[in-house]
Length: 216
Image 1 (cartoon, helix red, strand yellow):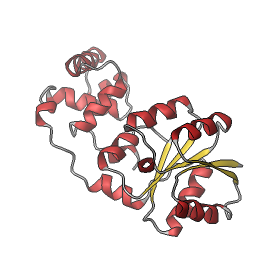
Image 2 (cartoon, helix red, strand yellow):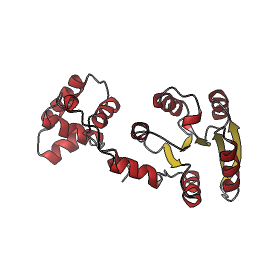
Image 3 (cartoon, helix red, strand yellow):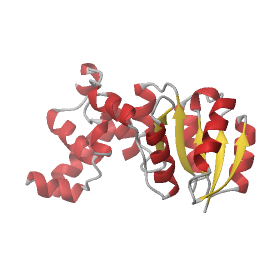
């Protein structure tokens, strides 16, 4: 059984979710948070809950603040439920592996129910509208950023972003471990980053990585 925390101060959303959740057997009880402080208090009490959050209605300064909140409570499952989320926000939040699901308030009743059922069962859900936004959008062309890296370094960064190890990349490209490791060091130095997570953020921003690769 899963506890649900509703972080949304729209009365109509509350009424609609109460109606839909009553037919989901694995749903235990629903708590409400009308602001960030109330949400954090509930997260401390219900560390394995599902949070249904309208990010646009809470006063978060940036997506980074939401990511930090996830890192503080890693067992929480998040369902982002909003009327409008930017492509930039969606691309950034999709990096957090399976922690965040997304469904728009304009989705059909059936799709919203599917989202609730999936996240209750421990699966990730990305609604059709969000999938289309990410699949059809053309990555911003930041030629000046891509030019920081040689074509070979861009290829290695792409493979790193796909989760491959230095050894795996070397084997696939029929190159030595030392060569790929040198590329990796040069990438980190040129981009002035300290870890893979920061390097991936750059790769997405520069259009080296297509975010659709992460969940297709």
